[in-house]
Image (cartoon, rainbow, N blue to C red; front, side, top):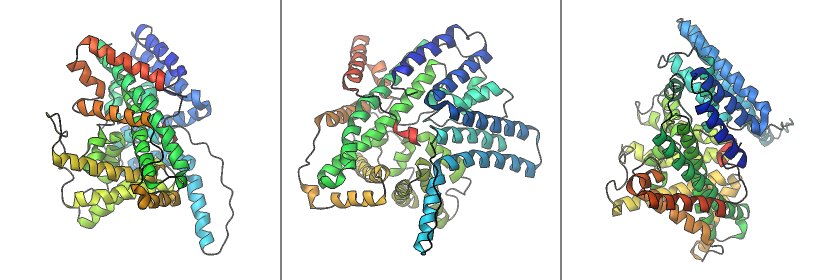
Length: 478
């Protein structure tokens, strides 16, 4: 079920009414309703894959219960690895089986030994990368004794399958979200209203900005050989804002929806295109995934505590694994490696924590140094996104070759006004609101009611007027 669908527009108010007016007197019943609603939400896409979520839930719940009573270090580690192998095994099979098979065959062919094995027609379960990492965070935290194993299976099942963030995050930590299922929730009107604002802004970013940019990004990338370098730059910029509007829009809707039900999810985007260096960008982009890899992979590997070579090795590992997490294609691996290369000079000169505060905090405009930092970081990000969007490595190289040719200095053959105006509007609104949790939170605190409602109705009008055919979110494929 898509957030931008009529089905969800009917589903959400029904669940909201049942949650607050029918099951509100019984916490366990409320949690059971969340589980039922979440399974319906996911099963709307394909009910057959509900068994994967249920099995993953049963495995990690059982492992957690086992870790509660087991003190033997060897047996505790065996329980941990049971969870890791089963969860990553499912993820590896559904997401990476054909990738490894195709590359295995290609490797044999290089040595003149043809090797024929039929690939499988595997359907990738929506959101498997997200809920797999979410359940693993529970097992890992219980193993490290950072979290008490739950005895409440319904609460745990609700944590794993919580429908607002089930298929595309944020990837919640068990230490943050699971305890919220233990406590009785009370309806908070102001929190719910702000949640609705965040949902509205998320829908605008997805349905209006991202989907408008997608039309031209797809047109240019799919026929890139027919366009000049200047037009290809526009195509890359359109994709840059497509993926931001699409993914951050989903996160806004997920977080806002959660607030309607009395839950607080972690922030997943913090205006990343205003970053002044690549380290700041990764602190502001897909925060739940970046911090997951930091805490469960980078730090256990040694982080930045060792020598220079260890820092370089760990940086490449975390970025390449992050790229591979996004998809079974060499383009994602190169995208991750390219970001590692961007990050290394900053880290090795100990400047990776230089830009912690919000850019131009307390001021209307940035200084010259900030402008240069934002533009250069944005340019590097756009360049990396070309690999992320390209069909294969060859396509990406051809795309970049044409950009860095004399045709870069020609007038673009395609200059669509609508997405350009929408991008400018998005940047202005988010710049003004950059010190707040989300864009519309600024208007809620700074503007009076009549003006706020004009803005809200304007966004609603734009969603219905400019929103075209219902399009799936990009990150559903990851």
